[in-house]
Length: 166
Image (cartoon, rainbow, N blue to C red; front, side, top):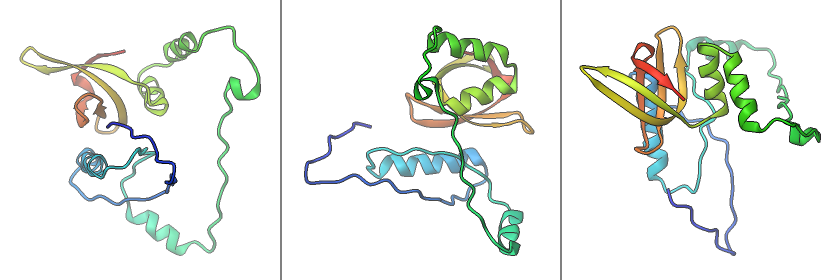
């Protein structure tokens, strides 16, 4: 997507929107949403989260006596607090990921929206090397959903198919 500079007589606006997409699986719904957003001509967008809408959520919202907005405090980085670290950010991220294992490492990569290379063994000698970002991790079904940054496609793999990621 090529970024166009804003014209001097135009302003930019950001909207928070909730979109409900129906499909058989989360990955298919996400792919449908990404396709729609890519074809609309928006300058930029960010998908912050995705959930499967359940009946209990609506029921609890309807039965709630009052709804309170709870402020969310974001963690401050070292630059914001004025502290300077002697360790480079790349080394700090590598050290943090080494201390984590399994699902925690994948979740940390997913939360930080880090670009990784996924090595996938599809069987019969077929190996894929995919530059991607992790979108979702389903621990119960052992599925991982990734966004291929070159092809702009969403793929879902079983965790048993993944040989390595870096």
